[in-house]
Amino acid sequence: MFKLLAFLMIVVPVVELWFLITVGKWIGAWYTIGLVISTGVLGAWLAKREGLQTLQLVRMQMTRGQVPGQALLDGVCILFGGAVLLTPGFFTDAVGFLLLIPYTRNVFKAWLKKLFDKWIQSGRFILIRR
Image 1 (cartoon, helix red, strand yellow):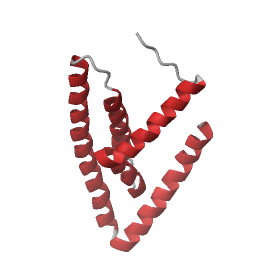
Image 2 (cartoon, one colour; image 1 turned 180 degrees about the vertical axis):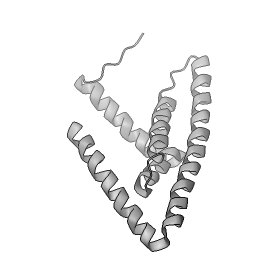
Image 3 (cartoon, rainbow, N blue to C red; image 1 turned 45 degrees about the vertical axis):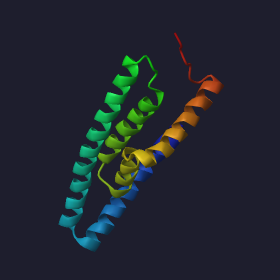
């Protein structure tokens, strides 16, 4: 896991920088900067909207005595998507938007659920129930 994160921390910025320079040469530096700022602003707005809706859902489920499992997975995806959108670049913005849009977020939620189930089965993650 550590090797994968180290690899991503090196490769992703290099790819993003290369792509930003390529797009900048193609459409111009100012348009590229404007596009990066626009995606950041749009992403922040979308993250706030989706995050507040998810927070309301979590609160509602908790007041009814329900465990907000799916809503918490939504929250994790929204938090990560918002954080990734703060990183300048087009590939990270694409991943961030995919995590913020409810339909595509379901794919990531299914993957996270499988990952958590695997961790629980292997004993790497302990689930505490009261």
